[in-house]
Every structure is written in C-alpha cells, then in structure tokens.
Image 1 (cartoon, helix red, strand yellow):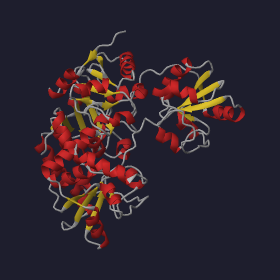
Image 2: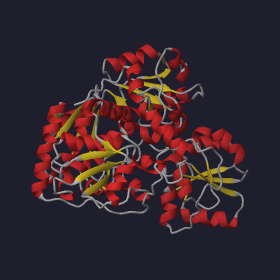
Image 3: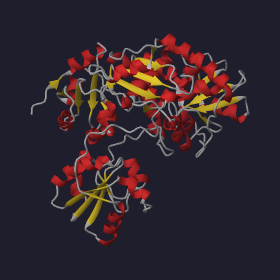
Image 4: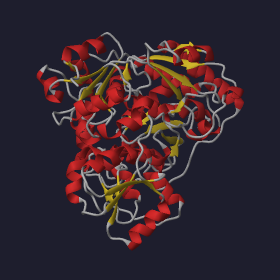
Length: 529
C-alpha cells in the first residue's frame, strides 16, 4: 500500500494558518532530542498502539510522520492507518529534507515550552537572583520562602536547602498561606529555567504582593556555583482555607481573562466529545491524588505546571482545542495554566461550575487502547518456576530503560521494540522467550514481531512487570543485560545528581539561544501578556 508523502510547505502552512496537524517524530526520544522541527512531537514507533488513541483522540486529523531516513516514518504510518486513522502521510526525506528546505531544527525536549519561557523572560524581564544571592539570603536567615515548582519526585531527588515542593499550577493557590507576610521574599526554582520563569511570572501576573524572584538557572545554577543541594526532602504545600481559595480564584480568573481564555460548560464538553472534525483534549489539572478520588469522565490527569512544561508530549496535535478543569481549587489550577497555553497560541477553555456530583469516575486515567492481539500468555508464578528450572527460558523486558534499571525480572534482557532485529542478535538463543513490559499491553504488540524472528516459543507475561511485583517476586536492579542502547530516553542535563558541569553549562547556553531560534522558525504565534 502506497502512503502519501508531504513536504515542508504543507507542514509549515498548517502551522502558519493555525490548522490542526499532528507532526509526529516517530524516532526514539534520544535521536528526537538531537534535532527536530519545533512542533514535531515525539511519538515513538515503539509505543504507537499504546499511545495513539490517548494522544490523538480524533482519527480524522492530518498526521505526518517524520524520521531521519531509518524507515520508521513509513512503518508508523502503516500502524496508524491500521488503527483507523484516515489522513496519514510520511514527511518525505525526513529531518534532512526539513533542513534542506531551510527549516529550523531544535535540540532537547519540550522545546515549544522552553522557547516560550525564554520569550516570556525576554519580554517581561522576569526578575531573578543568582545562586550566590539566594544562598546568602538563606544563610543570613532572611525572611525568604523557596518554592520548588517541579514534580514532587524531581524535588525529592535534589532541592535547594529550605525549599518546599509546590508544583507550578499550585503556586497562586498555595503561596498566600506559605508566605502570609507580604514582606517575605519568594524564590521560585526548578532544575533549569523554564518552570521557574513561568512560576515567577505567574505570581507577578496574579498580583501577589510579595517580592518574587526566580532562582536564576535553577538547580543547575546552584550546582555550577559550587553549592550543595539537599536530597530526599519531603516538604510539601498544605491545604488552604476557603477564604484563601476564593481570593486566589479571583486573581487567577483575572489573569485568564486578560489572556483571552474562553469559558465552557458540561454541555460544551458533551458536544465537543462527539465532534469528528475537531480535536479536543480534556485535562484535569489538580494533583493526581485529587483526580483519583473523583473526576469527570473522559478527562485525563495532567497537573497544570507539567502541562505548560510538556505540552507537546501530552497534546501533540498543534491547533487543537484544550479544555481544563479544576473542580476543587476554585479553578485556580485551570485558569493559571490556561493563561499560559493561550499565550502559546492554543485555543483553550476552562470548564466552570462543576459540582462534585459530576465527578463520577475514580482511579487513575486509563489510556484508550486498540483491541489487543491474541498471544500465548503465562502467569508470573509459572514464569518464575520456568526461570529457576530451565535455562532455555529467557525473559525480555520492553519497558523504558529507566524502569528496567529501577527493577526487573532477574536475568531478563532489556530491548527496544524499534531495535528488535538488532537486539535479537545479542539475546542468547533459547527454546522459550517470555516478553514483559510496563505497561503490560506493550509486550503483547511486540510478541507477534518477536515470533517472526525466532522459531522458539514466544509468550507474554500476563499483567507484565506489575504482576511480577504483585506476586512478591524478587527484582534485579541496574543495567545488567542490555540488548539495545537506551535510546528511549534522552538524558536531560538537569536531572539527577551526577551531571557533568560542562553539560549543564552547555544546556544553559542552548536555552539562551532559543528566542533567536523562535524568530528564525516563525511558525509559533506565541505572544506575551
């Protein structure tokens, strides 16, 4: 079957006209991060069946797949067509053709959001203090509160001394009770620059009376200054009073109105869910714990700060409609992220007047999946017995490299689905292979491809790695048996505690150049309040 091809002018015109397009870089995250067009969202070939329906909720949108000549784009297009997507093309010539047409290419991940953050700072001159200045304030026991706007797990890994975890969208709601004295100085930090710039500017835009500064260059700047970070801290924001919530709600609503955020009702939601000509994303911006205790049907849990930071990962259809809801926080955590998304040229709505009675679903978000292939299955206890008694059984794990290193079935091999043929050359020959993954469904899709490459029996572990853990079985840690290079995750220079200072400085230098790159690209439509 011949798949249509598209070129630079088609993609660029869609972006310039603010028309819907899913421009998908289907390589693994590491090669994607080395160079890609600004709005080429990363949706790896390895995970298409797992992620497609959740990230591409409308099967009629124009999809253009991109690679760098490896042949992944065509494979991805075929898989998307088999999943029922009707308008799928391949970007002819890949990344090199984009560059040959004078298309700008960007490094790293979450580039639209990071570029936007740099644009905000350049336009608003968002105030910041150096790591040395902040350390001096802390050492002098000045009246200062440090708020860390990253995810809690990032904060827990490493943090600024005295810092409190307040993920970005929570700031305007929580800060008045963390710093009730308007003379208290507020320092906002993240790992690098974007989230601290957006967090600081959020508080300024909302009219918080305190002096607010970003920690310039975040934990990277702190480390490059030769200063020690804390590890394993657990300080978190607390619940706030109804009065504080009401005042924060008014502040956030004013900011959203200034940014042109639109309002929506449950009736609008019902109508948009049935639309075939338009993509709509429905996001609940509260904490995951609040979401799981009760949420609207069809809404995905995406805490607001991460939504602004990782927009293209969660909403890869540029030009789509985004609807946010925060039923229990006076809409603060919807209005503040919405104000930023509007400035990033999204059509964004906040859902008002949602009663607790409407929050009829409980538990974590379940991504919509296609029909699962029928493959031979085995339970965790049987697999454990096979592995003990029979050296001719080998387990192969298709989880992310990070999850594999964190804990895997003892003796199992890590492999990437996109590198399967190469991986099979490294995995020892056996009479029986058992495939596992997190999520468990991924290994079912791999099993059919795996079977084509071997005459041995191929099984999938029922319930995947989660079932092995639930059975109380032992885990092995570390990168013990790698049949594929860990291309599925780009190593960010701001994560973890053992990063080369030169890599940190290079990352900052790259961020400083993003505004100029935005100007060269010219397709973003960003503006700053």
